Length: 316
Image (tube, rainbow, N blue to C red; front, side, top):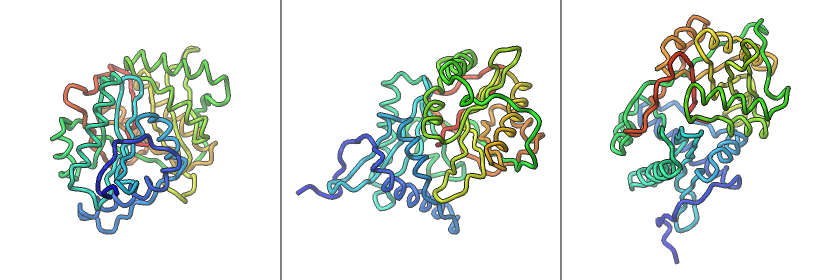
């Protein structure tokens, strides 16, 4: 008879695993907050629709580990957007932490991303959690800039409408997004996330043209992140703009689309390496609500993008 504590090799996560993944996620992250002294924080389960998107997006990188009794012990969602690879969320069941399982699931993620040719390999963690930073550092990750979660409440429909990808021929529009991204961040490709967002009905893409050519886009979700919440917030997952002026116009257009979609708040996760874009958001009324530390594997870090702004959310 197999020992319950023996771990099987990683298996591909399936939609049938979502309830168990969600349970491990909520328990592990609540436990982490409590150990950081935030005893009142309870992390809710995520919207199952968001998990379906994450599992489909990670594809073969959506990994779960089970014990000898086939109970789910850990998971790691390993994503790749062209040559940009990242992991998240990932978690180990609280009663199995301290056994080296966390190291094993991160090393498996690194191995798969390296085998797939990822030039960037990263993840995000809470900057106040020194245990996590030390753990990932021991696996070869190095701290970089912050990802700053910023939000703004909307007071009206706005005056800078743009085009929604879903309102036209999706194929050419997705290709235009890929060409624009390749032009400012070689090798990076958000096509899969765009297509899955539309397929799963989670949101849309705001397209911004300049002189008849695509000059910026923002992929966003309005489906609530947490289970049981109302869809009152638009969250930007990926954003590309050729320069700061176009970035400002794109943010205004996203706000218009948020209002049309029924959302009354816009949330943007801004990488602090883009200091001028961060300042533009502050000037536009966005306020900081949370920070995550962005860490990349040594030798697999992000490169500068010149005048362009490229926000790539390493969370689901």
